[in-house]
Image (cartoon, rainbow, N blue to C red; front, side, top):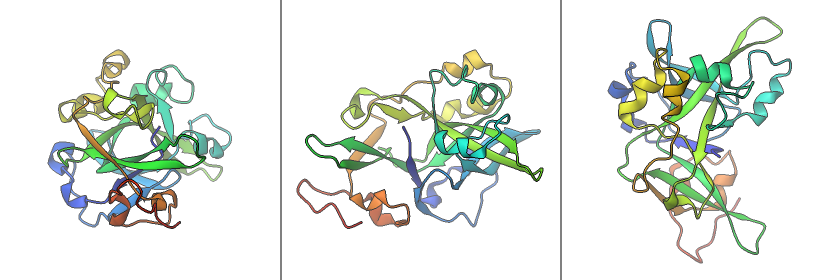
Length: 230
């Protein structure tokens, strides 16, 4: 799954390769959670654009918007056929820029889980594969939402979790966004990144609280080091 991520190092945003104008006032965020508005890159109208989408997809046919609370992630293997996601998979794919994300590892004999920081080993920005959708609220206003696709984990990170967010290689960004890419061609991109792409390390439990939002969240901790105060 992908339940939290960050876009704190905003100076690393590769606006040129994303193909959209830079947002000069983009605020660093170190603990982005479902239910908040997130930056996305999508094809819309005549070209690519940046957009702010609420994280937690509400299908256009939904009667109750709270369904979005359960749809922050979608399994890539079945998204093209599930009623909640299939329309978006066909026509509304997007990218979510991130400089890293968080996963929680079960700890043998304990109820707690150990949080880990995961980011590109080369420090570049990640492009998470996602879907976006629109929903009209009772007042007639469009609400635009999104979900992050997940894939089975690669061997390198299997000790942490059994899923990873879909991370698209730079040369596949345009292919993912293009309205001319068929469902079958898009599904060819639904694979985990190679084992040497990502780096991971354990971090403090402070990340568990969404209100904590600062660069110290990603600092590594050593075995036996205090986990941090909530």
